[in-house]
Image 1 (spheres, rainbow, N blue to C red):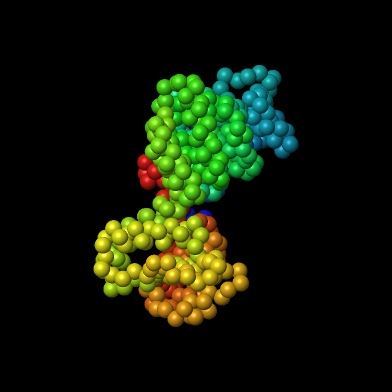
Image 2 (tube, rainbow, N blue to C red):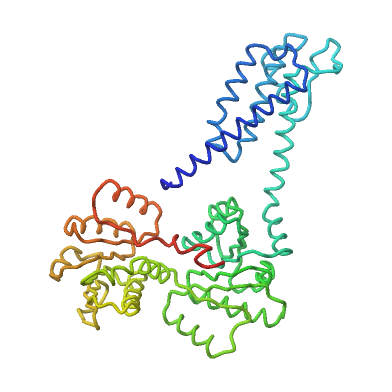
Length: 461
């Protein structure tokens, strides 16, 4: 878990512990203020309960979700077992006391405090605490189990009636980042995909996300997810063509049903440049869709954000000789946005770009030099040294985060004065990167992560 998450958890635990102690103090005050104190609360049980109540926050820290159940169960067990063993009229064995205690969880009380077995007008206070704790544990457990069984159906019924939810088509690592951010903002989220793993379903449902598993060609999913009442729809399939197909199917459904649409925004994520151009042309040449369509590319968004934050490089530098290692998704976008920023600021600084990627031969295209490079077989340091150029900045944009980090560390030792930027999608690699840059003076920097741009605020949802 990342350091900032760990710090956040510690802070939350401290607040919960404080509230816990306040609640316990209030509860004890009420019990001893309104309930008659008798001899059942003797010295040994007082010590035992004090130690239990003071030490329970340790349990609370590691079992937060089930803390109330554990608290009630243990409180009923401690008070019940001690009471049945020491306060019964007859000297019952340990096993009898244990059996009587477990009967409490079935809301069945053993009357062993009178000689003839009749119910006394008043039970010892310790047993009153025990039976009410056990009853509370049992009843709450039953209701919570019922709710969790029907929770997703209840949530689905609610969005079908009230709407105001976000629908995400496609579940993968990138879309999960957006789902997390929306849930952190307490937004209602429905995620739709053809298949989910058991772990993914459990993970999403624990977050309070409605999961709908269906084939991409099933048009009933539009009505089932109450798409006409949604705040937004995000088409985020792993394949661009699947997102385009869903977009066209949704338009057809809307035209046929002619229902009033509350949909404020539809976002479609496309990485393929050809699909981006075709959709743009379609929207411009046709009358348009029945709803507002916004096209995004997370790698482009990340690149735009980076260069906006580093615009000073074009205005305060004498020269910009950029080396981009990798011409994949992020590398291509970083290059394109660097060119756009250069034109935007009308910089007098000279800009040149050297790109290492899967090019067939070395070539010069405008102010770009393309050099063939294959990460699996070529030695990056050797390729750079053979080029014999003094770069002002290096961007490592390879496909694997771990490879990016290792190459960045190696290059920082050879070019100790050159800023080296990398992009990470894997949380563990990003955490490792932070450790490396904290414990050393290496000139390694992050271009940002997809999590930085896949947010409710940036997408204006």
